[in-house]
Length: 499
Image (cartoon, helix red, strand yellow):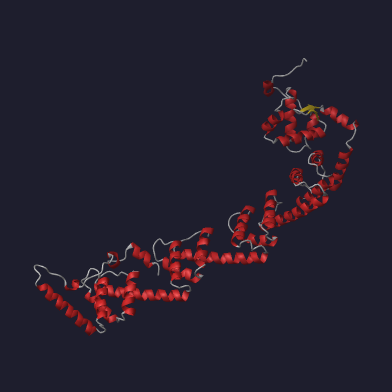
């Protein structure tokens, strides 16, 4: 069969005539995007490309629209009678004359079902809003294409009016209609359940926006978040309103509130669901934050936000000790340069292992350590050495005083005898061990014992050829780590933190 066709490559350089009647009568009332589809299709029709298999995909790609949106737009123009679908596989559309369509519309048969639907829709708005033809055509598509009963569509419209106002967008209502279709809502009763929940969510979301100082209608995403909080996470609406007070930094938003509620849900194990529970949880959280900040300040750390990591560390310490003990540990750790939370944890654990779990016992222990260190410094001064206030030396002093029952004057005397010794503490331990074995309890007895020892040692070594030894070094000495007696090592400093 003979035919005429145009070169597809020439379309770009050609021109497409558009009727003024279309621009004046049809374009103003058409939904967004539908005019693009009409004009692009009209260009293809004039170019002789109406039966290409991939035509709709090409239009979709060219206009950055989903194929379903393109097909929906074409159905719209079919209902307006500017298009006729003449073939299905592949789909072929014939563009009608706009002027002829307007004439035939006046004399042609009416679509009574559509006319009844359109009239009922007009009656719902009355004089408050004038609907465009595109609005009624789009709404009727929910009946024909989405298979929603007309009474469900009317309920949808009433729902949009009550939640979004009389000037709501039919494109936004299209999303709700699609959701109803996907949920297979095909009765008025089922729709009423959906809309009652949705309306409550809309009002609740709007109330939250007011709390945030935003005077606008909620978005679909915001309503979805609200439904998640109230239905999936079981937060009462009042509880969510209480949580709004936590948005103290930056611009309050639903995304910000979502993070707050997620944290509350995790920390409370899903228990802070009522307004009263939420208030109690947030109050406890604020108290915890203040305690954590005090601990951080004690070790020289300043942070803008107390994150969940620091909260977890603090709660670990709180599981074995109370807040006062933790703060005492922070103050003690803060004396060490570059101290961190790990140092506080080590102290709290160390004290807990010693049975020190309240502020009174810890304070008494620290005072005892302070007194012990003061005594050690005095002994080291007598021995002519730098103080070595290590835990090992504290244990030696405890043994001398408590187990062996030596008085401070006797200890001072032993320290004086150790003055010329490289390692005074092990030397004193050996010296005092000998006194303990011989039941020396007085200064006189100690002096006599020391004199006997030095005389004996002098006689034994007088005959030694060319050998001269310091008398005090005749006492055999234990094998001690030099760091233990020649000043605190790095390990000693670390150990000293565990008071």
